[in-house]
Amino acid sequence: MGLDIDLSVNIGGLKLKNPIMTASGCFSYGQEASEIFDLSLLGGVITKSLTYLPREGHPPPKVCETEAGMLNAIGLSNVGIVNFLAEKLPFLEKLDTACVVSIAGSTMDEYARLARKLAEHESVHALEVNISCPNVNEGGLEFGAEPGPAGKVIAAVKKEFPRTVIAKLSPNVTDIVEIAESVADSGADAVSLINTLVGTAIDINTRSFKISNVFGGLSGPAVRPVALAMVYKVVSNLDIPVIGIGGISTTSDALEFLLAGASAVQVGTACFIDPKAPLKIIDGLKKYMQNQKIYDINDIIGTVGNR
Amino acid sequence: MRKYSDYYPVIKKEILSPGILKFTFEAPEIAGLARPGQFVQIRTSDDYFPLWPRPFSIYDADKPKGHFSIIFKIFGCGTSRLANTDTSDKVHILGPLGNGFDPPAGQNKLIMAAGGVGLPPLYFLSRVSVENGYPAEMITFISGARTKKELFEDGNLAGLNMKLITCTDDGSAGSKGTVVDILQSELADDPERTVYACGPGGMLKKIDMIIMAKRLRGYLSLEELMPCGYGICSGCAVKTRPAENRGSTDDNRDYHLKRVCVDGPVFNSGEVIWD
Ligand SMILES: Cc1cc2nc3c(=O)[nH]c(=O)nc-3n(C[C@H](O)[C@H](O)[C@H](O)COP(=O)(O)O)c2cc1C
Ligand code: FES
Image (cartoon, rainbow over all chains, first blue to last red; front, side, top):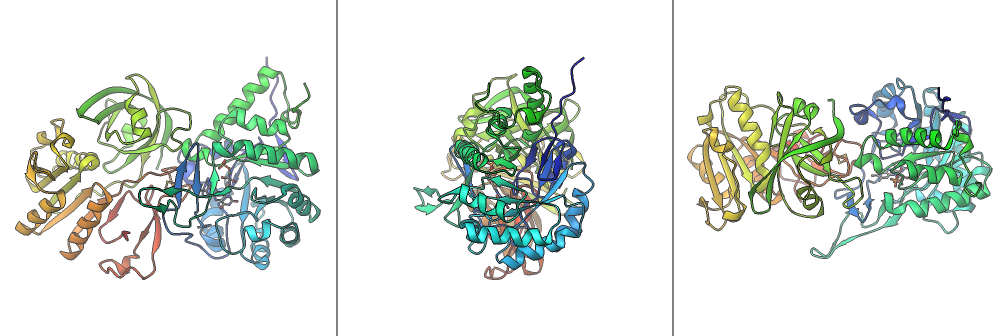
């Protein structure tokens, strides 16, 4: 008779049955993947970042493949808050998993209005505030690149939304710890990191950039060591929970982040290449814990260095 | 629509011409659902070289046996690695994906315009249409390639008894001329036809212009590399004209982005705004 394994974690008031979530922009609003597997097995689903009005985003080509990674300049194409509430939320609220809505604004006011609208829906368990999108001209990173504005956005959202607020941080800054401290001081219940790293690629035959927007965000296995280092730095300097993101594709990738102190992780690009990657990671975590004779996932988190 | 994501074995490898291979997989779930015009995403290995799976149109599906097949040309790292798998090796397959073709309706004659390895979905459509009672003599199938070496045929196509025209750009086999040239002369003889096309982007664009100019009904199947293939990333977006602007080529008007992987790969003629 084996002891039950407890994978549940608490992220600043947000209860997750396991620490594996899907990353914003890498899972649409969930419906497509539900044609492949039961989403209720996930710890949580994070939606594509919503803006107040629908957006088409940048013109094609929006993506290109790089070594063990990819660049994207989707440009926050999304259905907008009204369509989201009418067409996407009814699907998400039927799932037995945490529903986290990602929001992105081009003004402080847009963030606040999004938060106010979403606060009305109890089925939105948490907000992830995207202050780190490298792919839009206005807003996005403008708020995430400096500690002052980053903190102000979070304070504005916190005022409107009574449940868990997660600040999603950019790696494209001089000191990510400074930004993390600022959003924590402004009331963020947790931080998630990293968003994509700014990059570009050129087609030498056509002498043109491979994506229409010239600059895109690098994601996938190639970014994992960078993401892990940033997560470890933030964990070492902050008291609120940290959610690790960046290149996580396998159980051992996820374990690296948990050991470094992330309380949960998000799987992004890996969902593209294997829709069931998050499920494989959950199964793999259980096996790892059985082998290590550890029965509570919280006994793994942040234990790098203790043996 | 239900989709499956799993490891399935290669059960047969055939070389159709140098560098052009036919692979058959045992994947009952996918074979059972596959419709003409749909595709699968395949990853040969769990590593990241290349990162994205590669899309392949379904050439045929045998539901009772639980098999389906693809035909592909060795092109880059994804297709070379697939070519190097052995029978009984398992590869990761996600499918069936995409909208597929609407089955031909009414009494219109059909023209299939296949450029190179654009042939598979059009063969599948023809095979199913004939099997469902569409008269084979009402279908003209144009299969073209650059040269003789790149033409391929495993006998199935001829077996359908359609009017089959093969062509090469350099005239080394079949008629001399491109698929577009042959299509144009066929339409000159008898313009009342519905056109189905699959092949390189340049060819599709030209065929789209012909269909629009002649005000015919037509369907184009796009082939593109894509990150996910099941609608979650928006990476495969193409510009399309809203329905009310179809037939107009003034592309400075509004456009909508559609996802090739779920809203396509089959688009109505007049829908896609080409670069
Ligand atoms: C195609 C694509 C779209 C993305 N869209 C968003 C988005 O809308 N909002 C956001 O906060 N992050 C977005 N991201 C960033 C991911 O959520 C994640 O932070 C990043 O990709 C790193 O994780 P990964 O390597 O596991 O993909 C996007 C990433 C990709 C690849
Ligand atoms: S390839 Fe991801 S949405 Fe089409």
